[in-house]
Length: 342
Ligand SMILES: Cc1cc2nc3c(=O)[nH]c(=O)nc-3n(C[C@H](O)[C@H](O)[C@H](O)COP(=O)(O)OP(=O)(O)OC[C@H]3O[C@@H](n4cnc5c(N)ncnc54)[C@H](O)[C@@H]3O)c2cc1C
Image (cartoon, rainbow, N blue to C red):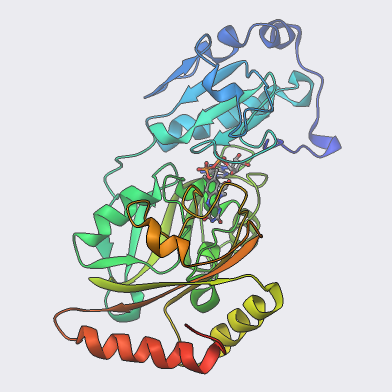
């Protein structure tokens, strides 16, 4: 998604002749900037594509920032060039969004992944319920997890797939099986550092610059570029009991899921998904069966019908909790929920 740099009419001035000349030559326009990172004007193919490989918009340049000030001075420069430059700026995380988000046709794409390894990364603070980690907006969630696990901690809310950036999912929502309890990832952010459309670096939270904070979270990159996020953490379990229940009846599936979500004592992770079952249960990328155990799969008669799967998990700690007791707790929850369990 393209971050349009907004100008109110009274702020717009026609660009001087020198600026108009720069506009046709982005290389010259950005040469004057003193950067820790660099611009790439030739090697832009990667930033021209979206995940589905359907939308192709070539940017004039890709910024590979090494500091927040690289992003701030670039955005400020574009802002000061005025709207007649026609330049737009888009932050690009891992580029896994669709339909041309994180692309800037003829504009500037900011490759957020080059803004990792900042000193604050992995710096865990706080105690009790206030534990958090400060991470770069370009950090992948998988790396956030690896870092926090070193201290026995993990973010409260996830996406299923972890090779997405912090800034990318916080610009959307970030949903997985913990969202029923903790809300999506955007509900689990304590503070953000944002580069605004004018190139200012602003710290915001629920209490400080709250309008910016709530605009940027889920804002599809339209309200600023997230350069740092303070993510809420909780103790990470060292064991998980993982269960999948397959359904051929959609209404039973959704009724059971709603029931599980409404319980006070339930699973720690609850997610439902659809299995398009054209290629058979074993060849399906969402298969619940192990290819080395075809007998188990053959016992489930599906006749190629679309299936629905409830995926649930109970977290526990192997030092304090007994696995058999956890199994029993899981069985009781499922028995109370599902009518025809086999
Ligand atoms: C295989 C796959 C699995 C997925 N799984 C899940 C899932 O389980 N749960 C879920 O919720 N979603 C999921 N998604 C969707 C995914 O969360 C979004 O597409 C997300 O935006 C991708 O993150 P990204 O780092 O690739 O961001 P990009 O695609 O690079 O960017 C997404 C949007 O955010 C903006 N943006 C990027 N970085 C920043 C920043 N630092 N500051 C401000 N704006 C920024 C971009 O301009 C763009 O508009 C999945 C997508 C794929 C392809």
